[in-house]
Length: 142
Figure (spheres, rainbow, N blue to C red):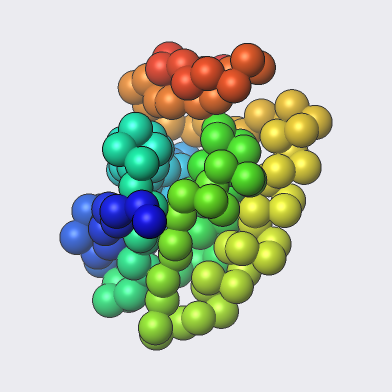
């Protein structure tokens, strides 16, 4: 059984999550992905842990925030890797988790397979992504 690594959007990012992209709002899903989720997920993989992401206790989410944050995760690591190594929880709004698992993961896996790169609207430092050989690379991706 894997150990668990816990993060919450409230504690690691913001009480007031924004919209999809950095160019559209502060505290966007894009920003959460690049500042928090990518590295936390990679660290969980390195330590053979399940990443538990708690969505509760914020002011709420635009669906675009969740789609961008967790969609980028699938794009960079693959749906199989993400599903096997993450547990998203929300007691307040279980529909958020359902949307992510049933819609976001599937749509972004299709994007990954067709090389339809995510839109980047902010200046981000390097981040992790599985390359074509299935190895993690750390760089600024276009």
